[in-house]
Length: 90
Image 1: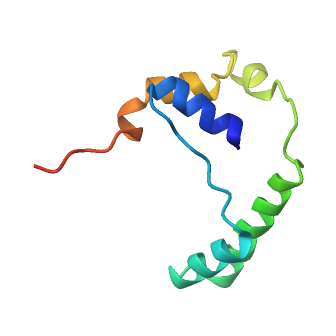
Image 2 (image 1 turned 120 degrees about the vertical axis):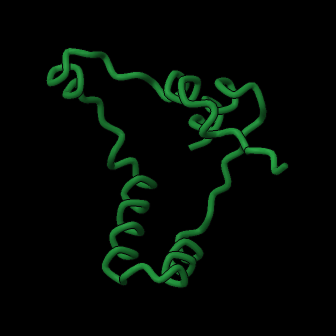
């Protein structure tokens, strides 16, 4: 995730830092937000799989199906920079 934060930093031209939030904090926060228990369990399971690099796989499926090469994180953030920029209150 630190490499993703670096991609955001490069795309936005400002420092973006990654904070490794413990899973028990995630679980507690999601529960307090009122998410159903099965959704909380699913999100936590997905996070655990990401931590174990179980989703670290290469696939050319997007390009095969669409005929378009998928964009990387930096290009996505550059194209959508406004979504990652705080709006100043007037």
